Amino acid sequence: MTSDDDDKPALGKNPVNFDSMSIADLHEYIAALNKEIEKAKEIIAKKEAAQNAAAGFFKT
Image (cartoon, rainbow, N blue to C red):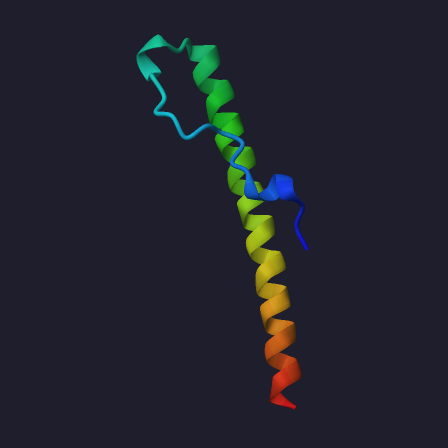
Protein backbone atom coordinates (compact mmCIF):
# COMPACT_ATOMS: atom_id res chain seq x y z
CA MET A 1 0.00 0.00 0.00
CA THR A 2 1.05 3.59 0.47
CA SER A 3 2.55 5.35 3.45
CA ASP A 4 1.01 8.26 5.31
CA ASP A 5 3.48 10.59 3.57
CA ASP A 6 1.93 9.69 0.19
CA ASP A 7 -1.32 11.34 1.25
CA LYS A 8 0.31 14.65 2.16
CA PRO A 9 1.03 17.12 -0.63
CA ALA A 10 4.69 18.10 -0.85
CA LEU A 11 3.65 21.60 -1.71
CA GLY A 12 1.47 23.72 0.53
CA LYS A 13 -2.13 24.57 -0.17
CA ASN A 14 -1.43 28.28 0.06
CA PRO A 15 -1.28 30.26 -3.19
CA VAL A 16 2.22 30.95 -4.46
CA ASN A 17 3.38 34.54 -4.90
CA PHE A 18 5.38 34.24 -8.12
CA ASP A 19 6.26 37.93 -8.13
CA SER A 20 8.43 37.55 -5.04
CA MET A 21 10.28 34.48 -6.37
CA SER A 22 13.65 34.65 -8.07
CA ILE A 23 14.40 32.70 -11.23
CA ALA A 24 16.28 30.12 -9.14
CA ASP A 25 13.30 29.85 -6.79
CA LEU A 26 11.00 29.28 -9.77
CA HIS A 27 13.26 26.50 -11.07
CA GLU A 28 13.19 24.87 -7.63
CA TYR A 29 9.41 25.23 -7.53
CA ILE A 30 9.09 23.53 -10.92
CA ALA A 31 11.38 20.71 -9.76
CA ALA A 32 9.21 20.22 -6.67
CA LEU A 33 6.07 20.16 -8.82
CA ASN A 34 7.62 17.58 -11.15
CA LYS A 35 8.55 15.43 -8.15
CA GLU A 36 4.98 15.66 -6.88
CA ILE A 37 3.64 14.69 -10.33
CA GLU A 38 5.91 11.63 -10.44
CA LYS A 39 4.79 10.61 -6.94
CA ALA A 40 1.15 10.91 -8.03
CA LYS A 41 1.84 8.81 -11.14
CA GLU A 42 3.43 6.09 -8.99
CA ILE A 43 0.43 6.04 -6.66
CA ILE A 44 -1.94 5.83 -9.65
CA ALA A 45 0.04 2.89 -11.05
CA LYS A 46 -0.14 1.07 -7.69
CA LYS A 47 -3.87 1.66 -7.42
CA GLU A 48 -4.49 0.56 -11.00
CA ALA A 49 -2.47 -2.61 -10.39
CA ALA A 50 -4.50 -3.39 -7.28
CA GLN A 51 -7.74 -2.67 -9.11
CA ASN A 52 -6.74 -4.87 -12.05
CA ALA A 53 -5.73 -7.68 -9.70
CA ALA A 54 -9.08 -7.47 -7.93
CA ALA A 55 -10.97 -7.39 -11.22
CA GLY A 56 -9.08 -10.45 -12.41
CA PHE A 57 -9.84 -12.28 -9.20
CA PHE A 58 -13.57 -11.68 -9.42
CA LYS A 59 -13.81 -12.60 -13.12
CA THR A 60 -12.96 -16.23 -12.46
